[in-house]
Length: 235
Image (cartoon, rainbow, N blue to C red; front, side, top):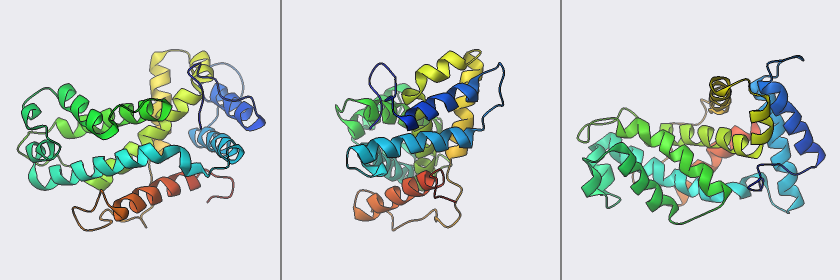
């Protein structure tokens, strides 16, 4: 699921509509502006179409992403409860506790994604880095002010906005009047994608269960509800 390295989506009807929506979303000239929600809705429809053609559901293309989210959630909870140094040590990164955030991010993303390649891994790596920066800006010995569930929700929102940017990159970049507008457009997409369903609790299970079935199901539920908001039959 997704596009090639040429950053051009498939030429089906749903993808053509998504590309057109991307152009309208960031275009500074003519036409009625398109809201972020409508662009995401058309993008999700294109992903659905591709998945259906491959005999897969919409979540199948995000398996690696969900596994990374489990690790991020566990890291966030350890950091919130015991401090950043303890969280890094839990992943065998004691030596980088005092190093630069970039070094710690590289170590964590390498541990969580290993040597996975492809579009999904590239997007997950970028989204993980954005979320980890929030945590690693805290003191190594003090709680970072975020927990596992909040990090996972942010990660999935950023991941989906970045995935959209990869898949529709050619149309978005051609329409954007400049780099600031492009970045602001992506930020609006991430905000739109941020799950705001109060029915999903911040404490999905007992501490220490992120890597098990409970963690997998909770992460999957979060991603599923985010995507459902933008499906044609969604709320």
